[in-house]
Structures are given as C-alpha cells and as structure tokens.
Amino acid sequence: MSKLFYKALGKKDIWPELTFANPAALTYDDVLLVPQNSTIVSRTTVNTSVKFGPYTLEKPIVAAPMDTVCGDKMIRKLSELGSIGILPRGNMDERIALCKTFSKEEVKCVYAVGLKNGFEEAKILSKNGAEIILVDVAHGGMDSVKNLAQEIKKNLGVFVVAGNIVTYDQANDYKNRGIDYARVGVGPGGLCITRLVAGSGFSQLSAIFETTSSNIPVIADGGIKGSGQFAKAIAAGAGMVMIGSIFTGTDEAPGEEIHGYKVARGQASAEYMKDNGVDTGEFRTAEGVSIKVPLKGSVKNIIDDLMGGLRSAMTYAGAESIEDFQEKAVFALVSEAGREESRPWLSEVKK
Image 1: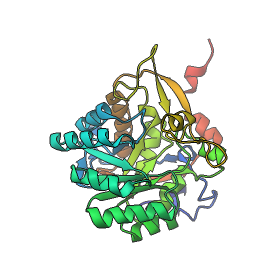
Image 2 (image 1 turned 180 degrees about the vertical axis):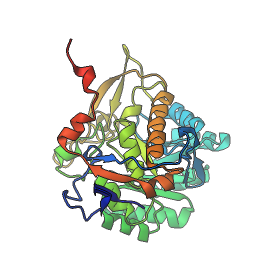
Image 3 (image 1 turned 90 degrees about the horizontal axis):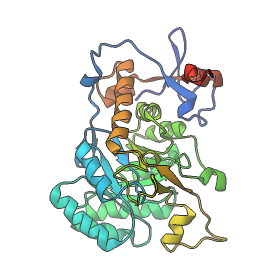
Image 4 (image 1 turned 45 degrees about the vertical axis):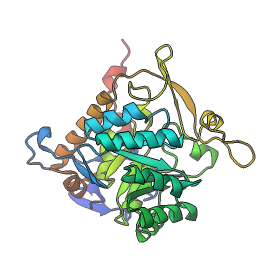
C-alpha cells in the first residue's frame, strides 16, 4: 500500500519518514493527490467495489450509527444504492424487528451494540440474521471494548467492527485479537467536539496511515466534507469511509421536517444523552453538538457526488480499482497558499 509523498523532480518520501512535516499531524486538507500518467479511458471503467464481511459493496460508503442519520429508510436506500448503513443502538425490540425484516428482504445492514449488554444484544441480533456487528464506543482503545469485540467474534461467528481508534499500536492489538475491521477517527466529525472538550484526538489522515500500517482493514470515520476528502481517505488506505454529518437533512435521514430543516446531532450531544437517559455532570460532559440543517433532497445526490469525485481521483492516479488506487496514490504536502489556490477564487470577486 502506497504512503508516498512527492518532493520534486520525481523524488519521493515515504510516510512516516517525511522531510518537512510531522508525520502525526496530517489531515485531509494538508495534502493533494498528485496526478499520474494514466491509461484509463473513462471514469466509467474504474471499479469502486469493495468486500465488507459477507457483502460486496459497489460503493465504499457506510453511514454512521447516528439517530439523525441512519434508520429504516436510510438503510434501505443505501442498500439499494450499493453501500451500507449501520442501525444505531436504541430500543432492542425495534432493532430485532428491523433485523428480522432486513434479513428476510436481503437488505444489507450493520448492527451497533454498546458495552452495556453488548454481547447479549449481539447474540440476539445474530440469531435474527445479523452478519456484521459494530462495537460502537467512542474510545475503542479501552480493554472493555476489545474484550467485547473479541468475545463476539469468538462465540457468535459474525464479522466484527470495533472502534474508534487512531494509532498503530491500537490497530495491531485489534488485529491480534481477531477483530475484522477497525473504525478509525477521534474528533474529526462534523458534529463532534471531543478535541475541544477533552483535548484528545489525532489528525485524521495520519490516523489512517497509522492504523492501515498494521494491515487491519480500516473504516475511516469523520472529517469528510465532500468528495475530495472522501477520495483522499480511500487513497490513504481506508477500505471504506463512514459518512455522518453530510447525510443529515436528507430525505432518508430520520427526523421530522420543520420549516425546511431537520435536526442533526452527535451521539455524544447533550440533547441525545438527555433523550436516552444519560446523565451529564462531573463524570460525563457533552462531546457533540445539535444543530438544524436545511433539507437536502435524496441521499442519492450526495452519494453520486462522492462517487463522482472518487472516480475522478482514480483516473487522475491511473487506477483501475480501489486496490490499484491505494498502490498508485502519491500525496503532496500543501501550504496555506496552496490551499487558497485550490479554491475557485473568481467566484469570490466582488462586482
């Protein structure tokens, strides 16, 4: 897997041995993908499919387990479009009913569980057809998370995703315990304030480089504002990208439409915790926000935009498949002036 950075005149550095940057400090907007010589004839010919557990997905996109992002309608639409959603934690009876229905109708879905009663819930869900379980905890480096994921994997025979983690050591520990996929990212989400509240996190591009260096399959979670970041996450080695904030406000996202808006909130927001009986105070504080977002139309429009950008990035790299893209991708560090140059400055000229 490529972790090459272009210097000049064909010379390259290999991450983490970078000449002019802290290897742990990189996020998506710190880099560009360098165009390569290419034999690709058309964007339509590149293959964007990936394997995820028992499924083959046409698009490497998974919707986040957030109650204002992913519910019945979203999961069905994503399955229809060739990607996948995660049913969030919540009322167990409702989740069992959906699990039975999705399994019967062959709707692709991942099912989230937490630490409390996680094994029992995973066992019931697997008996009703669930094939992929996510141990959904913000700090995936805790032994309790790893032990639960390991227990589910060992005893239930399902594919297991756990997280969130950010470092090479954490990823190696996951791999050694037989966990199938690592969910990677602490603090980059559009509705997350963990880095402000706890002062904890890790720059997201570096987190992908770190964790994929262990050769565990990675789902990059957070920091995706559009197709450019999406393409860079895949190029860096993520097998799939988790999308949350930019799916909020779509027709398929859960929630009531009020005067042209829907509510979007992080799962660690004060509003979510209040609605779900989680007390805040000395031992817990909100690490997410709640906002109103304008209605956006169908999620298909956003997925089309993400995939169009990915396909374009793959043709610039001369890559025929996701694996080929990750082998051929070359990054270049960008200055602040370079970031400014990337913007469509003419549209900002005042008349």
